[in-house]
Length: 249
Length: 249
Image: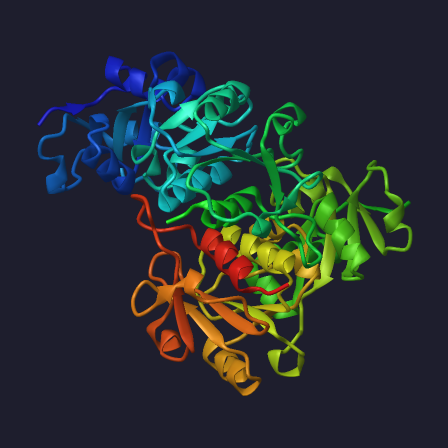
C-alpha cells in the first residue's frame, strides 16, 4: 500500500485547490468529505478518485474505487470539518444544461448566500422529487464544503446547474413550465394555488428577496402568510413549504 | 460616560458566564448578541441590561435602556460571532409553565441536537402562530448563541419552555389537545390530515428520530413522503411543512 507522504505531492496540491472556489471553477471538479458523501459519490459513480487516510478500514463499496492513501497530515490539510473522518471523494461537477434536459419541476435559487440554506434546499428538492436545481448569479458555490454537507448527497441525485436565471425562465416558458416567484408584494397566498404537474419555483436572497427583474418575468408570485410576530421565515423553510405544496404526487 | 475597562470587573465576569450553558442554567439569564436581537429584546421589554462597545452610535429605542459601555476588548470577550457589532442584551429566560398557559398549538422538540435547527424551528413556530415551544431532555440549550441567532428574535415572541416531554404530552391530553408525533413507521402521510384548531406536534432527533416512549403516547403519527432519492428531510424543514399544513388560519 503506497501512502502519499508529502504535502508537496502534485496530487495533494491539486486536491487542495478544490477546497477553494477558484480551484473548483477552474477544473470543474469538487471534493466531498466524509463517509456518507463518499459512499453516495461512489454509488452514483460520480467519484473520480477516493482519498483515504492510512489506517482507516475500507468498506466494501470502495472495492473498485481508485483509492489514494494519504497521511493524517494530508487528510487534515484537505479537511473542512474539525474532526475529519479522513475520507474524501474527488468528483466532477454536474455539466447538465437546462436546454437538453427533460424537466417538469425545477427549483431556481436567486442570490442565496448561506451555504447551509443552499444545501438544505438541494436536499429538499431531491426529497420532493424535483428534476433540477438551477443556481443564478450571486448564489454561493454549490460545491462549497458546507453546501455539500447540508445537502447530504443530493448533489449526486439531481442536476445542479449554474445558469443565468433570466435565460432559465425563458427556457421554462418555451417548455410550457409555469414559473412561480416568491414575494411579499403583488403575490397571492401559496395555499390558493393547487399542486402542479409542471412548475418552476424561484427562491430569493435571504435579506433582499427576489430580484425585481426576475419577478417581472414570472407567471405567478406566491407568499407564505406570517400569523405570528416573526418578520419572515428562513428561506430554506419557505422553500420546503412551497415545494411540498406545489408538487403533485 | 463611564466605560468598563477591565475584564476582571464583576459585571463582565457575570456576563461572560452567560456565554456558557452552566452559567445560564445557574442564573436563569442569557445574553443575546447583535443589533437585531438587542432591538427585539428591548422592544419586548425582555432586556434587563444592554451592553454597548464604546464609540458605537445609539439608536433611539435604547433611550430608556440600562446601558453599560465597555471597551472593544470586553466586547470581543463576550462575542460569539467573528465580527461582533459590539452590542448585547442581557435577558431573563422564559419562566413560562405549560400548566398555567392557555395553549392551543404547541411545538415539542425531542432531543434535537443542532442549534441552527432549534433556532429555525422556534422562528417557524413563531411565524405560523404557535403558542409555545417545549424542549425536552436532550435538546440543546435554546439560549445558546447559535440558537438565538437562527431564531432571529422569536425567543421574545412566544414562551420557550424546558420540560419533560412525557409530562408535556400528559398536560396536552388533559387539555384536550391532540398530539401528533413524527415517524416513518406506523404513521400516515401528513397530507391525509386536515388542519387542526388545536394540536401539539413533536419533532425528533436528527438521526434517531422520536423516542419510542414518546411515540407510544401520541394520538397520531405523521410522515412526509420522500419522492426522490434523498433519505430524509432536514428536521427543521419537516417541521415547517407540518406546522404550515396543520395550523388552521
